[in-house]
Image 1 (spheres, rainbow, N blue to C red):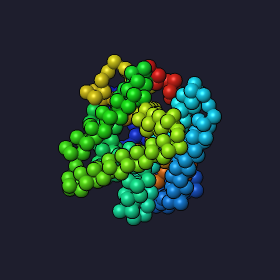
Image 2 (cartoon, helix red, strand yellow):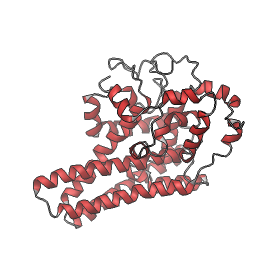
Image 3 (spheres, rainbow, N blue to C red):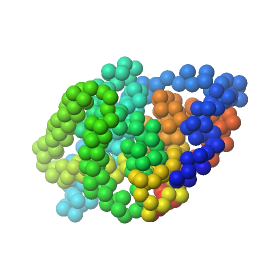
Image 4 (cartoon, rainbow, N blue to C red):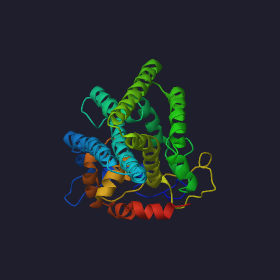
Length: 336
């Protein structure tokens, strides 16, 4: 079964290999074949940039409100407000970085070079990451999902106290940053000089961007807002990012005593709902992550249509069986 760690054999129609074997046979209630339907699923770039803009606007509004409110609170209130602000901004950064993943699949602009420039400027700047470098790491995730060779492995960990501590302390993010660089250096077929220039450029741009935010907040005499920003970027963002990925891929049959860096976990991806929380925590189509792994090239702006089509085919029951919620998944996976 797909959700059984250590056993990847499956006849599930939504298993990646099985899906690609049978997708030519998928026909909806109107007689339209999936192959023809898929041709219509081109990205809606206006929606992509509306969604990205909402994330930036949300950060701007949250920071502005925090600065104004912090002027009127005492020390205890300022500490609580700064933590609350950090959590919101960290959540919004995680929301935005999901679109960096969309850019890795060339789905935020029609021109590939422009796609990469925009990704680095509006998204990668938060986390000192270049899209060309990230693309190498991320594609390995698609190739090696569920195996020790996967490059995105937060789902190898148990959702326990250790996970919370490593994520919220920023240790996991720092570790991943250096491991990512090693992976790119060892596995890239791209020109190393191009990748290194991009990496250095993004690190400098990110340092300048974050320093500028802190200087502006200091200018407005908002030390607690400065602390909130640092906690958002270094603590809450890594936590939300890692938690989302864990819930997408960790099996509820996983064993916390097994090190999946050395033993196969098995492929598993989930489909979540369409609530405001689902679409923000799982932004850029991560709430439909199983569908993304079936068709990595399809823009998140068309995954709802893809899901609706598949429900009308022989894959319909499998789609229903795979649907869950973040809350149910959290409860199932906690301390496993």
